[in-house]
Length: 433
Image (cartoon, rainbow, N blue to C red; front, top):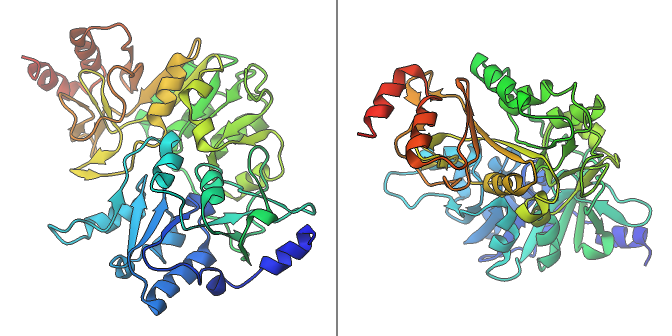
């Protein structure tokens, strides 16, 4: 068969595509924007109608398509989420779980770079379901916004089912998938989820100015999503020859490409192209990403490998955190006694940036939380260590910044107290006595 004949032969309905998924199976789904809504609806209906039990679902960062189907509270006695990074969906499920219960979500602690290994460690997954961009005349789809773990897990799974969405951008890089690799195809014209950033607070604007001043011409950027990274990027439009090697591609980074601040000329790897492993944004961003050779998509085990990151000089990694203790250790994933998110790629890029020649790993956060009632600089962390104190390089709050490298424990404590809100400084100093 030629590519179009193969496509027609494997084209089916969503219900028929998931018909082979049964009780006790391990199924991976595309993350974030690549969640396949029609397949997830069909899978949820199959769980209910066929009485499936112990269906283990593997993924990171769910959005509404999953939250309204396979992650509905009424299905969680039969669907067991194995989540590597929590979103609002899982946080709500955990909050509403009965007191004393084991909980509806199995959280899997792992760095983003290790997600593929974590998902396949028990052996090949039974199925993978994900959204892809439309097939070209030679039979190639792309994984679109989500290369991450999906491109690798899709090929190792026993059965690969794809939802072809004309709104999914066609992406360059190691993102190609041939129709001969696919077991079942469905079509669905569904708008992609859009992620909007709010307005930065005065404190975030102050932090953004401090961070932007540390970023010179020729730096290679990694940024997260949110108001603070967006505010930082907005201050970089006058820079020259910036590069991008990031896990998450965002509209804020794309604007630096559009205005000419990013050229990727100074990079050692993938020169001239902006590297990422997954993308989230709005409709104009997806349109800019589509069929644009200035972008280069990589699997997460490559994009987030600290050794690979460090091949570029002057890497600047900017990440947020929830707490920093007086030794410099960071808790970026645990809040109010519960798992809040996950370690994601923070430590991957902390280590990659620090190992880069001229690199800077920046952990940035407001000095307080809960409208100023709680200090983010604390004597001891309330949760797990996301970034160990041995790895933390630069910490920034609205009160300034400090480079922790080479400092003693006492020097670190003094410096970090100076970054705390003034109303908490005496209390923090007294905790050392």
